[in-house]
Image (cartoon, rainbow, N blue to C red; front, side, top):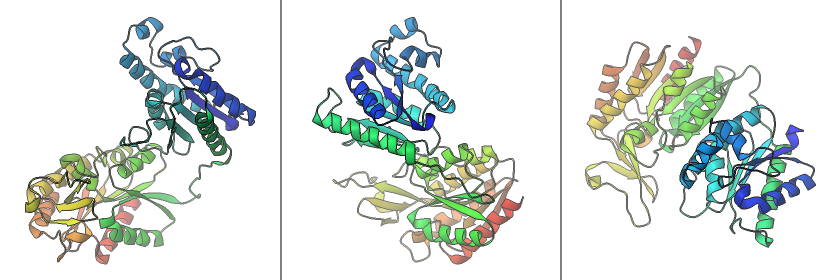
Length: 410
């Protein structure tokens, strides 16, 4: 039965003994195994449900073409071919959870394929590279993937590797049996909202006001370079009904760099899908820098910027007027692509809590430049509302909530 089947992605050309140990462990506990062999050295596969040649066929790559490639090219070709293959296998109901156990090569090929699966499908990567200074981006991205370091390399069976393999197989079986994808209650509309610490007060207040007016399920995303992508991934899966995008700080980082970099082309997917949307330029007036243990990463001209330390590792800095103007123009260019009305609610007295009058980032010149750019570049489909307040003021949250509800009715 598919609900008791674990997809096991393994390179049998290098990890055959370990792969079959995992397979036996799973089967001895009453679950089925759908073994996918993503080997790149040899294309003949003994004991696998899916051979490397079958994976390559998804990309239209044949044996001769593949064998003529270099090692790096083979890994990249297999990586790309596995993405549509795994998605198709899941769509056919051939497994309930997916697990990859190995080193860097296996994780490199398995992770992108897992990222192609919907939210809620149990996904586990066990890799000897899932540790140290390496980032989680390569393994996780914006998806719900469990990652665990193998401690010892998966290079033979011993007390450590047997324990690790048994534990991650048990985790996969537990997720397959007890995991559940919850659905929104009938009649409720899912509102996706974005938030950072410096926009929390305004966002939470606006969501409270909106929730009082209808049957909504708020879903908040941390706009830290990944959160915006997570929101848009769920938009792509049709799990979002409307968007209250209160924090566009990731756009600043897209333009100028900074700690919350990583989310590109923000706003465009919601526009493409035609979702009702209200937008607030929360955090669009600042850039943030990560400070390492040696104090590095602050720009040479840091003394010219108004700034405040969020903590010992992150410094928030106010944009210059010309930077703020450009960021506002880019937001408008994206919103102007919308085929339906979009609400744009702009605070005149700062787009983050510390930009309020008297705050460390208060800079009326930058604020005026941003508001002027919004007025100049907002197109016909953009319903612009400028509020004489800071984003954290109650009156601003009330205006944002009201404009969101108006858009929802259109």
